[in-house]
Image (cartoon, rainbow over all chains, first blue to last red; front, side, top):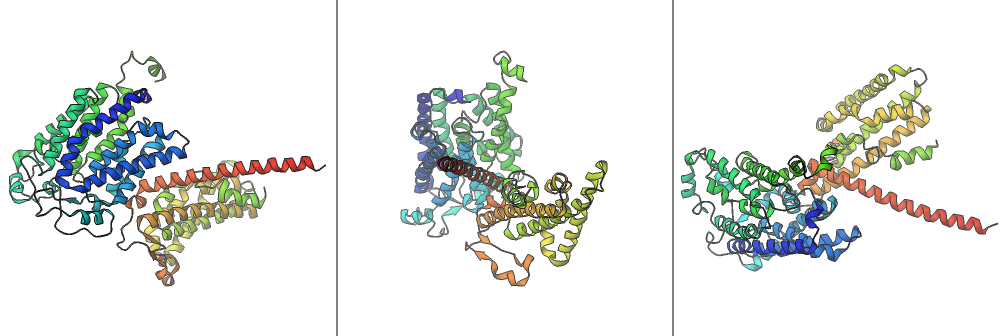
Length: 337
Length: 228
C-alpha cells in the first residue's frame, strides 16, 4: 500500500486537490447550517494535526515531513464536514484523537491504516454520544432567525445548554419514523423537505457531486467505485420505492441527494489507502458500500448508515485486493497462495 | 522456587490477564463497573486458591491418564460452592454476573495453574500461587472496571451495596450530573481497546525496568572492580 505514496509531492498535491474539490460542498454546508460548521472544520483540522504531531513524536518519527503531506488535515476536513454543527468542541477533539491515534498511527501511520480514520472518529462519537450526534440544527430558511454567534460559541464550548427551536430531525430520520404516512404526505406535512430530499441537504449533496466530478475529471479518484456505489443504491431504492406508499423506503433521488451520500461517494470511499487497488475490487467495494448504506438506512438502528458501511467495507479491502489481482501481474503472491 | 518469586510471578511478570492473556472472556465482559469486577475477581481468587490447594494435596495419588478430568472436577466443585454461596449472600450481584461465575470453570488460568504448578509443588506454595495468580487477575479486573465505570458511567463504586450490604450504599462517587458518559468505554470494543492500552502500558513499564536494571548492574560491576 505504501507504493501509492511513493511520490511525496504527488500525494501532497492530491490532498490539496481533494480539499479544493470539497470547497463547494463545504461552503454550501456552512450556508445552510451556520458558523458551527466553520468551528468544526477549524477545530478538527487543528486537533488532527496536533494529535498527529504528538504521536509522531512518541514514535520518534519526523513530524514535519508527515504533517506536510496533508493526510491529517484531510482527515480533519472530512470530520469537520460530517460532524453535526452544534456538537461541543471537546467531542471534536475526542473524534480526532481516535481517528489519528487509534485508526491511523496505531496501524502504522500514513498508507498503513485499514480503516478510514475520519469514519472511525465519527462512528466512535456516534455510538458514544448518540444524542449529541443526532442533533442537527434546522437548515437556513426554516428558523425565523439564525442563531447568534455568541450563543453558538456558548454551545460549542458546552457552557450553555441547547436552546429549543433550533434543532430538528434530519429528513432521513423523518422518513424512517413517519408512522404509516405515504411519501407524498410526509413531503406535505413535515417541515424541511425540498424538491427531492431535505431542504439544504439536496444542495449540499449537489455541491459535493459538482466538486467531486472535478476530482474524477482530474483522474484523482476512480469513477468505477463511485458509479458502482451510486448505481447500487439507486437500484435498491427503486426496487423498494413501492410507488411512494406508506411502506415505501424513499425514492432513489432521496437516497442519492439525502444524508451524506455524495460526500461518501466522492470523498470518503475514494480514499486510496482504505479502498482496493484493482478496478474489479473497486467495483465490488462500491456495490457493497451501496448495499450496506441502503440496508442500514432502511432496516438498521441508525437513520444514516454511511459511516458504518464504509468501515464494514474497509475490512474487505485486503481480501478484495488479493482476490482480484490479475494472475500474471503478481507471480510471487500466487506462489505464496 | 521462592515465595517472593511466586508473588512476583502472579502479580506482575506472569500475570494471567496481562502476560498469559487467559480468562479474557470474563475479563472483558464483566469489567463494566468496579462492583461486578470485584465480585468476579474475588470468586476467581477463592476458587483458584482452593483448587490449587486440593490439587497439590492429591498430586502424588493421581495417575497420568485421569489427571485432567480430575482437575476439572475439582475446579467445577469449588465453582459450584462459590456459585451457591453467592446466591445465598449476594443474590442481586449473582443475578448480574451468574453466567460468568459458572464460566470460571472454563477459565484457562485455573486448569493451567493446576496442571503446570499445583500438580508439581507442595501445598503451601500451590496455595500461595493460586492466591497470587487470582489476585493478579483481580487487580487487572479492578483496573479495567475502574476506568470503564469512570469513563462510561461517570461514577465510581456504584452498586457496591450488592457486595458489601447496605453500608456501601453511599459509597458511590458521582462525577457527571446527567449520568451520561463515554458510552464506548462500557461497550465491548471499548473493553478491547482498554485491554490493548493496558498491555502496551505493561510493556512500557517492563522496558523501563529492564533499562534501569541494566544500568544498576553496570554500576555494581564497576564498584566490584574498584574494590579489591
